[in-house]
Image 1 (tube, rainbow, N blue to C red):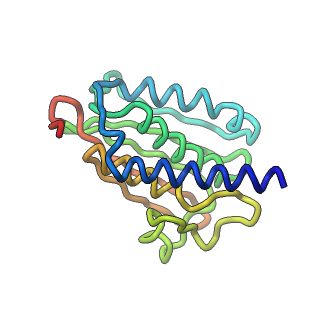
Image 2: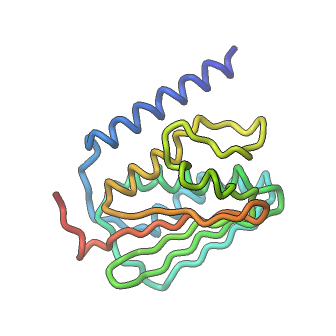
Length: 185
């Protein structure tokens, strides 16, 4: 009964978060270093990484330009994407976080050696309540995490897409504008 209450509470909180993001209530942005948010997220997820004995590879350039964004929402985006990579990668697998800087943009790739997403599911994974057809039984989720991620990316004038092969893994690619090219609303 307690687990059911926790699941329902998490679902309601996710719905509230998504509604708040979509309504633009979290539009307050500041200039922030993405590297700090990445490191904070990794430290918070380190117990799960250790428990699953995952190999985490972090590839960052020497200098990452600042972003103009909402640090809480960007951390939520990373929590969801890196958390999914951990959740859907078998023990002893690999999770890679890579940042590339290119012409006023930051390109963030979060890759795993997990179960992958079937091609038929890929166009729908950012829809609310959608879960891939091959999601393992017993692996929790409401199908809202990637919808929240997409809303956050959109709210930051970015783009996101997925590249995945079943049985080999998944890569989420996020492109965000750097601060100098960012035009606040």
